[in-house]
Image (tube, rainbow, N blue to C red; front, side, top):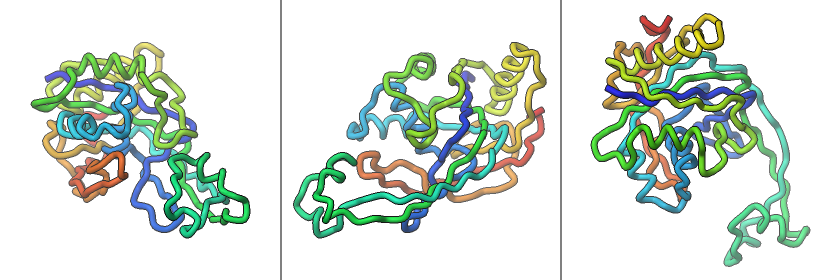
Length: 242
């Protein structure tokens, strides 16, 4: 089977988890919704194109090899936003629209946002029946994206090119291993071991999972920021990952 494998590394990344109040936490590896958003941006799909986003969700599955979860960075800051009374019946489609309200109608809110520092992972994409693009087209889009790519938030650009490659392998773990080995041979360094491997339903992982968790990152509506629950499988230090 063919897999499309690419790398994700950045000084800062933010893979959003369920937010409560003004606290915005992050996981230490990408969510399914973030990876689908990355593909959509590369392919030039706009946020309001719900059918196109739904086709991506159905058409592709992911296996993530975590090389380094990075270190936690917590950012505390303030922001100005209009009150609910001021927003009523007044259009505000952008942050600029919000800040154009009169100064006496703006309130100050506190916000805490988490980031991961120097996290690194590799991602294997498995195509499913009915996928809207062949893997080679997705790889070409990641190499030359239509829209700017970032790792969770706009303040998190990739540190390295994503370097997408099509790899024929028996399973996702073998594809991740082959990709990392090729990068190591090119750089003259030793390939890093996987700290863990994570995948979703229907992925031929090539390894038995140690944990089964529920994650709220299944895209229901990209335009309305609606997400549902999804089962995720985790293998800790998977065999064959050296």
